[in-house]
Amino acid sequence: MRLLYYFILLPISRLPESFQYGLAKLLNWILKDVVRYRRPLIEKNLALCFPSANEEVRIGYLNDFYANLSQIVIESISAFSLSKKSAESRMTVMNPEVLNRLFDLGKDVIITGGHYTNWETATLTARQLKHEVYALYKPLKNVFIDGQVQGSRSKFGVHMISIKDFRSYMSEPHDRPRAFIFGIDQSPRKNSAEWITFLGRDTLVFTGPERISKEFNMAVVSGQIRRSGRGKYELFYEVLFENPLETRQMQITEVTMKEVEKQILEYPGDWLWSHNRWKHHKSEGTHAQ
Image (spheres, rainbow, N blue to C red):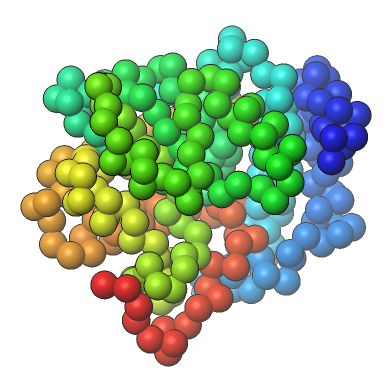
């Protein structure tokens, strides 16, 4: 893996942008037509969620998915050598005042969002906010590559914390209000999830943000990333729940997932359809409360 990093990934990260996006087009062809990366699963998921769409429409979504995924891969590689100036031009927080008001109130925040467009660019926003920003991640199996990836994410001010350790960060004393970024749209463990309707399907969803926001009285904010051009992104915040203790059970989970759903339906090809999102079935029973 060290050879892969030093002789392939790092040199690619230093190429001019035009060359990198040329590689993205090549990678798009390889993933879609040569190795057919998870193509049966992607086609299955699109058919499940868009049963009334004709084949031409679903093929369009599939093509858009591979183009988006290829761009994400190349942009993630480029982050190994990304400068501060380039990072700031890649991702712009359009309404930082939304979070800054909560900071001035001394409120910790949970930021929820989905794996939409290049979700990795959310780690480039820490210097544009007043909060101390933390992002949850699942460690990679290879320790060396994991260290390089987390280093590329954290060098612009965000603190990367493993999903295995995040509760200790929630509980520790702190002087500066914090914001924790949660990706909420992947398939959770069955013992920490509930069923809702998502994209027209019975879907098992992660309830962690709701439970944690109530336990620590943290505001819940939706963060939505939109592509504004090649390699350029905009991030919009919306406060969903400032006082989570006043909500009914499952209200936070349902509303945050509905925000993700709205964005997916706006441009379906930019979501991560390659994830095995519907591997659980409601007939297996309801789990954690």
